[in-house]
Length: 325
Image (cartoon, rainbow, N blue to C red; front, side, top):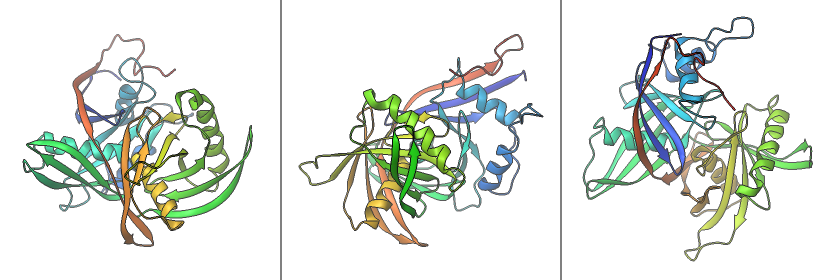
């Protein structure tokens, strides 16, 4: 498909990219954000009909090299479900469209204030209400001296689905706990999360997801390592989340942190979690209440703008929407 021009503004949240598409999208049919995602999933082309929709062409263009990369993440802005929300979003990555994204919600909160979509005080907080496929979430934007100092992601209620599920992998059987925080995550305790173990953990994540996908709509696997508590007494863990088809979250994973908080709360823990990523960035999280059979969590981090872009697909470009390595 030629004649594609797409404008974006890019952020990173604790190291994980988030590409917000501002212009160049076709109208996405559907009455709700969840319905638009379902339609988008069905319009990506099949083995017998490989021609994707224009929307999916844009997704591929932005998540493949040379304009993107296999770790790229982003959001298509769409109308919210009703007038109570400020915006709606379809989250996308190299493999398709996800139901939830905490780091993206944090970035969208920062962008909504930066762009003037939502007026914010110089000092204090403002709520940005966002409709995502899993429901309505809130980004609470904290301001100090006219600058955004942090963004708190308040998620949909998170529910524990199962504990101690045995999964056979190439290195033996592992025990996983599962929670639905808008997307379903398997949680696995490991001795070490580091750059040196990343290759092995990515391979295990793919195996675990493949083994559980017929029982759970599993989106990601959170590998977590216990660390010594800090001087302030906060529980301290390091994690890496492997999601979709082997994609690695550089941040501590916002919705994955919600899943960890629900599992910890089910064990009777209450407090604040210091959740560190594989690159050393940090989210803090806590349980703030209960609703609809789950716990309500808040995860706090910060997003920074990294650039503004206008991407094009030239008619003579033999690589088309690009490639993945």
